[in-house]
Length: 68
Image (cartoon, rainbow, N blue to C red; front, side):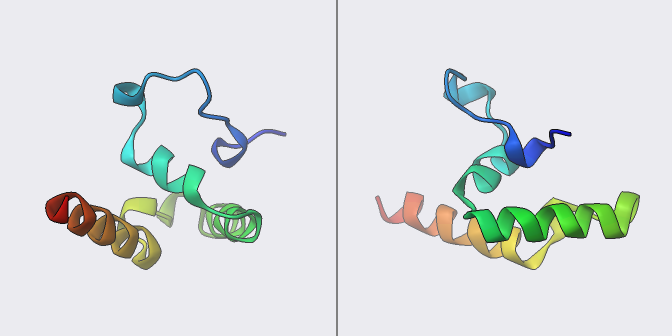
């Protein structure tokens, strides 16, 4: 059974990759497992874009882009 966490980003044009996909690609294996557990446990109540880790990652990413 494949999930979005297992989907590779190779060969995908950058502009076609969502911020959520970039975030998932940046996760290590343990974090990907935790994400799958959260999605499975919470079902439709889970929202990656509202998760603390995703928000912190997005804020850090935006800060780095502004500093560049």
